[in-house]
Length: 395
Image (tube, rainbow, N blue to C red; front, side, top):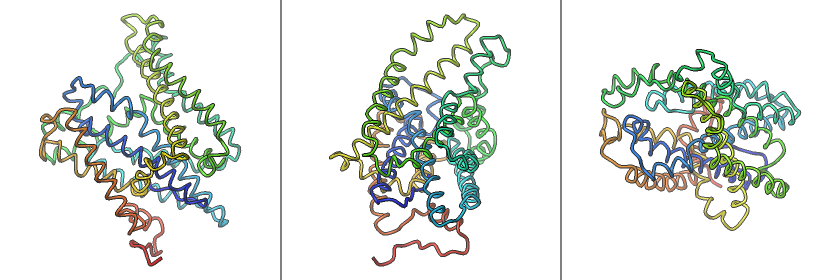
């Protein structure tokens, strides 16, 4: 989640930072709409909630994962330019990131940092594969979502385990989240709440999808997609047309496809598995549309609209954790307990104001300090014994 550096032009850094900042905004709006998970204790029909989820749910985290894979490329590319191997240092860096994510997960069960850190370890051996076609093929296999696809096939074949409700449908943490005190909340997030989250990532196929996006970010870095997007102008147009077609087809035709499959009443779980698969494929298509549109906007006059996201993209880790530190106590019972007092329109409007403040804070911060507080601590831990300046020196 840290800001991606690069050995290329500064515009290349700013583009990826802007993508990451945009992803942070989308994730924050989803979290606010979810009341940092408490929405699911008392869901309400709301057009505002539907719009937020249509725009960002399933797409913002995917964009994060893509940027993570690109950042891995940048670090490895820089090390290779110095004729050094960064693999060991990267593994240590991920261990530190996992620790940050684990601590953050005590505050907010929905933390994604620890997931990115754990899956990031697999990038090290895959980076030794120099043929980008093999990496692209591995990413495509991940995008098929093998586990939920296997669950669908097994369910149709009558396997008992595949015809049981998914584990993540049972959430032992929610009652504690709604009514428990701080000690109960922290104890729940220590294990049971985290187990429910990991089941969600496994059973929906998000683990493999995230790793596929890691590999995609790595390949895009290798071919210079963000360094010189003008070289891919025609390819980007064709890719946008394909992704847009797939996104529209899955948005409008998924329900009809499920009905056409002819599931019986006894095949409720296979039906759910197919619905989940199609939903994930749809979100992946719209993620591709988002990336391609944002890159195109960045290369035109609309860059002025995206540029404010770049500073936030440089201190994403600090802002992401800070959002939880502020709004979990805002919504939860051990704090202000406002989860059942505000409607979707109110919380999303509050989220918009809060994120605008974060953009201003980020712009002010990065002009004076090269890293966010957590980014600085992460970097200092990555290079122990090396002085990592916290403030900018004179130009």
